[in-house]
Length: 314
Image (cartoon, rainbow, N blue to C red):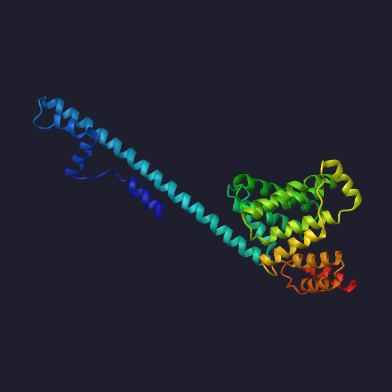
């Protein structure tokens, strides 16, 4: 209501006393020119009256234009503040829902803003779409649709703000997910691009434990890559990407140091990597932590299940 009242006040007819009008006329005509046409000037009464009326019309028109301009500035400024406030409000609600594990409600909230120009909203929508696709209750057809929607949102977030760390991270994640639908050749072909975006995300936000974890996953995947996939990689790259379990372990520990106990899957992969390196003692330690991690999401439950299976197999 306040913005509307401000506009209505500005839209009212201009009113001022003789002194005010005199100042306005002097401003419009210019001080020296007004002096020439003052009461003592050599000019006929009719000419003086006509000129004075002309000046008054100019003054009124100029004042109207000025008030319209000021009203436009006020409305634009208030609209920008309102839009900014709305984005911050949506982000606050989204982060609350994400922290509460309300995947479906989060997606419902953010999908309303799919045409937003704000990178912060877009990468959150990419994450929400991907998380919804990962639910076991999501059909295969809907999973595919959501995966591609997530990728498009992440891509747009990156286009809107190349300096946004989270946009790089979710672009890399969603590009990898798209590869699951387009075949192993595409997935391996995108591998270097994916890692580059993860590395860029860390450059922009060195303390982001989840992105450090993702580079660890990238290293782990290439370290255990079967021979036929290595052969595909050799046909795609002059120098195929490679890694080791020791390198993967390095990143998983880096992630844990950046934010201890931040993610059940990081604990699981610490245990799995130690198993690959035949260190059963440390594997038991980290797998036990993964099994005992509080299950806030469906992914946490899956991690608990896999950790328990691995512990029983040792």
